[in-house]
Structure formats: C-alpha cells, structure tokens
Length: 356
Ligand code: ATP
Ligand code: FE
Image (cartoon, rainbow, N blue to C red; front, side, top):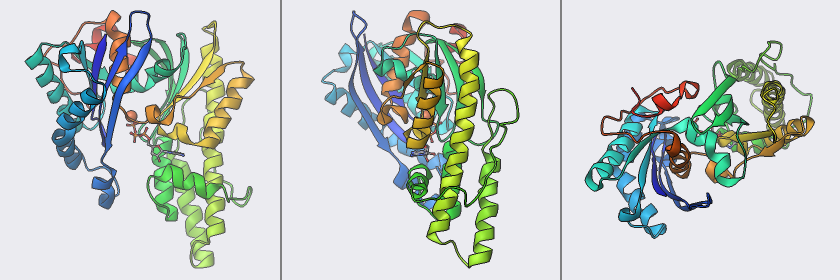
C-alpha cells in the first residue's frame, strides 16, 4: 500500500508519501515539512488564526511536492491519512478539508489519524520493535508514558499534570533572555553551567505513580532569576548558565525517576523484548536522552529514539499510523470531523474512525 499523509495540527504544514510492500517493509518515499516559525516569531507563540490560514494556503503545495518527490502520481495512492486531532482546531480543519477534497474527487479512502498515535507509533517506522513497547512522548505540548499494545491500543500510565517539558524549556529561555525555541538554547547554555550553584525542586518525585509537573519548576526559575537580578543588577552569563544547568538537571531527574516507575509497570506485562522508546521534540536533548538510555540499561530494556526529523511534527508518521491501523479499522467517510481534544488512551477501534 502507498499512503499520502497530511499534518497541520500545530505550526508545521507537512505532507508525506509512505509505502509498505507485501513483505512488510516500510519506506518513506517523501516527507515535506514547512515550518511557520517565522510567521509567529513576533508574537511569542503560535497564533491560531495565522497558523490556520497559512496551512490552508500551502497544504496543496506541500502535497504536490510530496507526490513529485516520491515520483508517485495520485492515481497510485491507496489511502489519504490526515491528522484529525488533537491540535489547534483551525489547522486541523484545514488538513481535514484538504484530505476530504482529494478523497472525494479521486475516490481514495480517507483515514483520520490521532496526531499522538502518529508520534507514538513512529519507532516502528524506523526500527523493528515488537508490541508492547513503552513510549515516553515528550514535546512542546505533551508529556506522557504510554504502553503501545498495538497500533490502536494505547495504555496511558501517567503524564504531566500541567506544562510539558518543551513548554518549560521555552518559558525558561524567555525568563533568562535566551532565544526561541528554548530547548536548544537552554541546553547549550547549560553546558557552561556549574553544578550546585542553585537548587531547584524536583516536583512530584515524592508522589507515587508516573504523573509529572513542570510548572512549579518554571516558577522556581523565575524566583531565582529575580533574586540574582536584585543582587547583581542583571543576569551575569555564568549565573545564567548555572541556572539553565540546574533547570535541565531537575527535568532530567524527574523524567528519569518517572521512567523507572513506568518501566516497572510495563515490565509486569512481561514482554519478550522490553523496549523503551522516546518521541517528541524534547527527545533532542542530549542529557535527557542519555539519562533515559541509562535507565533502560538498569532494566535490561533496549532504548530506541527515532531520528529527530521524525520525532518532531511530520506527515510520514501520520501516513505510517494509517498503514499500521488499516488492518484493524475502517476508512472514514466525509463526515470525518476535526477534534481539538482526542485522548489517546480512549482510542479503540470503534473510536478511531469518524471521531464521533
Ligand atoms: P506537540 O507535538 O506536542 O503538539 P510541539 O509540536 O510544540 O508539540 P515538538 O515539535 O515535538 O513539539 O517539539 C518542540 C519542543 O521541543 C519545543 O518546546 C522545544 O523547545 C523542545 N526542544 C527542542 N530541542 C530541545 C532540546 N535540545 N532540549 C529540550 N527541549 C527541546
Ligand atoms: Fe506533535
């Protein structure tokens, strides 16, 4: 099968063509991602109306480019997969409209895909990983532990009760005057940081289970910054580096400890080959990656992190999710709706379809 995927749930417009051959080998024939970062730069965040309009304007173009690069005409496409939630509703609607148009005009089956399922299934796109595997999805908007039992069966073990870590990195960058996106700039500032200058909390470590919290950490950074500024009349770069390092260390400690707990729960399912996977933009962080790798080793589990281009938003993961789910679900019809909220663990074969 060859599937065309569309993604427009946040500030990236993406189209991709993915093929699975009869032996089960999967290949990404093309993956186009157009980021809108510059459109939103002046506003300090993604502006939903601007995003929706930009998606609507360039989706067709992305689709054309994806088909051309894949050397695959629409006549050879067996399915159109589109993110139908969760996300910024205007963007999701743009994608769903575009997909419906193509599907109706050409008679190609339509598949609405959960964006989070796309992220959570990505490790199987690049690596030979059996179900069930444990997934830590950690991005700008999400942070949760999922056991992937199958392409349409996810069990949520816990997650953030407030901010996502990526969001916290972005806010901390703003607080200490570093450029956006905050993840890479805080990480690189942290490299020059010294241990022990500051002590920030490790939220919720004393609470059982896999839930996490990152908003208090951000507030603690704000207070520490204000104290430094009051004392020094500004933020000396060494102290800024120290603060970034301690913030990152706190995130690492929380993620590592909660991953231990999630692994303990997951291992009770006694999988033959235990695997911890990570996805989402925050997985780019070297300190976080190596901490997770160490935790996996403690539990004799293998550690898989897809390449960054597939960890952040893209349409190849959406096309691939549809391919994985096809044997377990029906295609959608033109009543497919865009869903701003769509929790993954409620995903059952009955709910994968039209979103009602
Ligand atoms: P979602 O996919 O949940 O809707 P999103 O699209 O905003 O959210 P991604 O594109 O997956 O998220 O990731 C972007 C986030 O990853 C940003 O918050 C960014 O700061 C963070 N990030 C990127 N690189 C790093 C890094 N090296 N360290 C920490 N965070 C990082
Ligand atoms: Fe995403």
